Length: 506
Image (tube, rainbow, N blue to C red; front, side):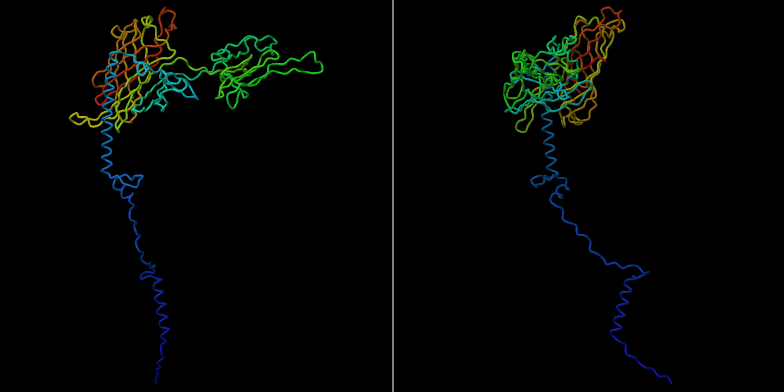
């Protein structure tokens, strides 16, 4: 007989087992033993800032926390284009006036432009061009340097400005020069030394060994520099010459050497000495800026062995452009444009020797000036016009006389201006074809300049001494002129230029 016993189930035990089963199933996943993940809320995207909203819509966020809309920006751009176009139209008028002046009276100079003069020198390893107006302080150029122009092989360029004045007028000059770097030259070749001015080491006798220093405005004292020649302000400094021993005082030696110190003269190293007779003294007078104005007594400078002086180039050519503009009431007007060429210490090629130059000569150089570039509608109406300055290359072939030159080519010039680089960065395919005939008895010429638009004019002149040819059989034959400079205008299908150029014989 079978007996069944019913055992009560602990409810707490059942609940615990159910909980364990649930946890186990959660860890194993709902299928294949995977891991269950808890869904997360998507990230909240922040609202765009006012600046982001402005810029995303094509606007400009301003420093005052305001937004200029895309429509307002376009209106600004159109206003700027209109203003630039209007200004360029006034420059076109100025270029045309310059073109008429060049055709009537070629060879303008900066002196004709504003009664100004150009000089150039090297300072701290770079060319420093100075443009001075008569009446301005001689130690302060009227035109201030405003930057460099694009480099052209053989020519250094710079920009200079004057103004604006109370009427809003500003003058701008761009000038290129072929000045050479200072040439280190043996001291005695630059400053001939005096005989026996320093007798301390004359064994054997040595002559022309020291330089006498003279005072006054026309003297050379201002070229001296020494650590002892300094003061906090204007001063007169005194230095002793040699003192001889007094023979009457046998127990005392009163002798003393003269003042002698290492220093420089015109940058060259050497020794500065007070070389007066016994008992004399030497003086140096300084102005408030510490500059030597005069010296007194017998001063000499003995250059160190191998001392050289950097001799500046005193003969060079220059060319460039000058313009005047007025900025008033938010508008720019170009009042005048002129181009110019000039020379310092360079001789014009003798006209009488032009007929003694035979064969051909090629010239290469650069050009600079001002431009106006235009865009048009299909109907030929101007849409926009930009303006600025340019730099370019010049190549010329000159045909002189002689049996080696075809008769129809003799005394003619062919060449061109190319590779225009515009200051505004505008692309262009400009080039100017230059042609001229010249009288074989003079050094100047003029001819036609063609850029694809209306024909314009150019002119120029030859420079340099008449040098004999190396071929002795040529008799009186001369080498071609060393350089040529001039001015030109040109009209293109989409613009105008006025410029000047300089080129050297190759």
